[in-house]
Length: 325
Image (cartoon, one colour):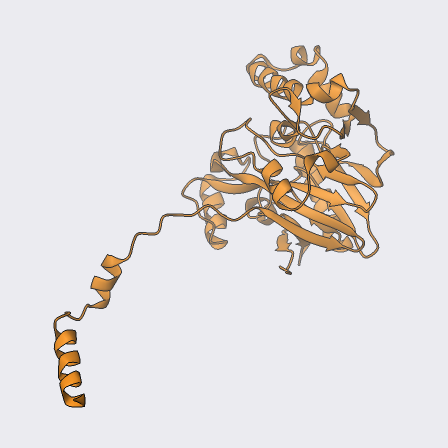
């Protein structure tokens, strides 16, 4: 009986041809590129919880970097194993800060101002366990659309209970109707296009007297404001001291964790005052490399939280936060 069963099994197996590894691989479905999981990362800074929120990934032309040969840009990217197919990669991040008595959003992402590949701050905020109605304060480092557009959509405030803050210098530059006449003719159209996006974003907050400005020396919800002008005339960063560490939300003093760390003297076309932007970056990088502050940056690879290191005081290195679950 056993012999008959064995013969039957052998006969059955022989009726199915053995497949090679190549043939097996051909039978598997092709796996298409999947969408990443929700883009939020929670970092505990002493008694404060910081939630990094990814708005999306953007790409910049190497030609945007000033006073550096395009070939050198490519060599730096190659050294960092950075994918160059679409250009120089940059993140757009925002940061939700729970201080225990206030829920503060630092910058807000681009929403739909630059296309469908961006605009995930709101959905990632909800995925992280918070609701937009809980946000009571929005701190904008400056008014470029990839920082301000996320506060509203179709003339409706995304954060209905929040008050929006930006520096007085920044508001004057973008919202003073006389400013356009001070610019070269070739820059006026781009300036007015940016102004239109800014006005649409802040309008719902202005209507409820929830758009406010500050000046150097002020504090907002415990955040110290730091003048880091250059990228824009009223660009400010925010410093928050927690029980265990100091966190600085640096805004756009840097756009690339590769090119502008190796060559911090390199400006970018987005800088309104390139010379001043470089001076600010060199000053702040030197301070953060020696002071060991925790840095939260909107354009460094998500989650954009980490530290700045320098071995020689000339070139720098971005050290991302070590992942913790």
